[in-house]
Amino acid sequence: MARAIVYTEIGTPDVLHLIEIPEPAAGPGEVVVHIESAGVNPLDAKLRRGARPSPPIVEPRRVGFDGAGVVAGIGEGVTGFAIGDRVVIDNVLGTYATALAVPVSKVFRLSDGVTTAEGAALGIPIGTAYQCLRSLGVSKGDTLLVHAGSGAVGQAAVQFAVLWGAKVIATGSPERFDQLRSLGAEPVAYGEGLTERVRDLTPEGVTVALDCAGTDEAIRTSLALVEDSARIATIVRGPDAADFGIRAFSGGSPVPLTEQEQAWRQEAIPLTINLIEAGDFQVELGPELPLADAATAHELIERHAANGKIILVP
Ligand SMILES: NC(=O)c1ccc[n+]([C@@H]2O[C@H](COP(=O)([O-])OP(=O)(O)OC[C@H]3O[C@@H](n4cnc5c(N)ncnc54)[C@H](OP(=O)(O)O)[C@@H]3O)[C@@H](O)[C@H]2O)c1
Image (tube, rainbow, N blue to C red; front, side, top):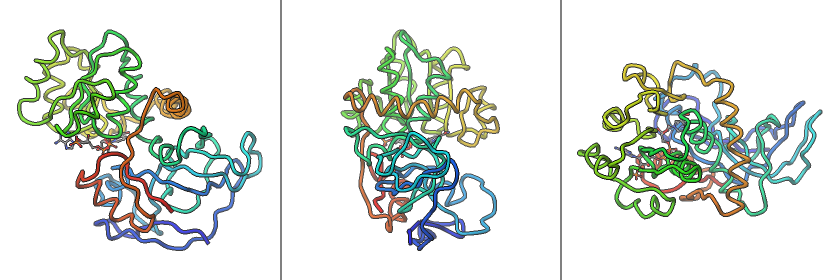
């Protein structure tokens, strides 16, 4: 038998339970991955507590979208993968588990130089950061403001933008400033007076902004500093972004991602694996917890009580 975390009602983290499930089999076009690390995202907790709408729960609902492990089964028609290959799973529901059947289009080979924990930290944060910056056209000569630059999406956005030649200002708590500096960003504390602090740091002006925080302050600051509102985006305030005249990518937005935006989210994963292998990109890892402690992982992420990506280990 395999094991998986599920819930049957919306609620606090203690609705999460570890159960036994049949070993998954690889259907046509799928591979089965024995999961070694699952990445915990804020979205997992938002869905569990009902902060993001989802259809009624009619059977135990699986949890988690990101993970990494080893190919253990290959379905009909699958080429290019062999049993034992190390892979990253990109955005497939159910990664809080010992094993998962995954469409082959959603797995990417992991290089020897990248750990499974690092692989499990890629999916949603890396795809989101890369797509947002491509959609916003960030390039050399830009000054980018990243709200919540110290988080998983924010740190990825900082690194892509620096690699592409932009100057980056990133918000975070003061104890996270060294981490932000190490990635090439100029750190600034969020909280009252943010707009003035960013203005002082950027006499040349801010040309583009990405909000990964979702606070009114982040939106107000972006609107005050960036002349062209088409170059302001949020990944958190999807439901009301249009009221501010800014762009939103997922995060509850009524506007779905375009095919190009979805393609960018996928393209980011193999590209980032290569960057990590080359020593040109890093993912910050946080606490590792046993799969059975998924509820603790959700408490930590909801309280912002852990730095770095929380990883569940089956
Ligand atoms: N739309 C999408 O497709 C999409 C994709 C991925 C994520 N998201 C959303 O984006 C957000 C960030 O995700 P993540 O994975 O990067 O989260 P994360 O790794 O948990 O990071 C949370 C970040 O929020 C910052 N923060 C906490 N309180 C803040 C405040 N009052 N003002 C400004 N920043 C504050 C933290 O800064 P310190 O730790 O320095 O205090 C940290 O940088 C979440 O809401 C998530 O659901 C959306």
